[in-house]
Length: 423
Image (cartoon, rainbow, N blue to C red; front, side, top):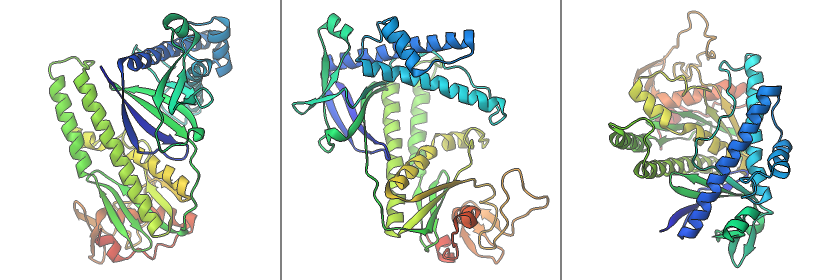
């Protein structure tokens, strides 16, 4: 019996897309399943202590408090299943979840958010993330040595397990190792430091991005270039996944799950991750080639949660991982020294960029406001002069106008050709 372990590289400034698949025997699989299940139980122990402390005192536990109570004082058996650094990392995650809860609670009381947050809940069985710090893992004979806890050594006679290190990584640069169980697979995520690259760019040159479904990303720059990242293939993959899931779930309870569903979901997630990485790389490569130093991304916060476009369109829109793509582009911008700006995009598709229509923000539209142009059909916009331009490119131009004064951008380089001709 073999267990598929995928090595997914993750950086501090970027998330790498390279994956190396290896095969581990049943002994290593058993160790990984044991560790991840013990991590879930230790996380529940920390959550129980934190919830009881909050109910009785109104306070939340700190990281040091959880380490002390479950480690040195009570010597929790789930804590002792791990190397001390690893157990502390698991409890640190619990402490951070309570800290986030308190921050959201303060935001709710001050009116910043409308929904009252809930206390962190218990994990319902299953497996959880296991994190090893860089100082805990050693390199021995070309293999990574992961230490185990004292109880594991006493019970099973094991003090460590080994996994191969990717050949393109320097062991000394790795800061953290994460074993992530997901859909029947184990991911070894390697967190490492990536040096920033200062590219030859001009901050006055900008690329404006408008996102959608069929046209996943529409990009127009003030240097006369434009292109579209097609989203129809991604939409087709999601549609096929939804149909297959619906077939397998027919007549089953809502909580039904199987190995076939897990395998299907994992394949779909990998396809989405691959699409995100390739689309982000296309945007960055275009920017570097044309010395573009500023990227402006149109984004309305909470738009997926409040989407009301019908069941079919909602499913297509919500399942497209545009938020992950936006974050990926921001990470690559940080690595190459580009400025990434996120701005709201209200009325950008209605107003005419060519005619310089006013652009109100959502909820502040003046009474009687009307655009001079009009979208005549899907994908086509007619300006006041009668020009026919791409509707998404028109939206890109308006997204740039929303921040042009603040950033000191000159949008005169966006010509009619860039709004019509796409490559």
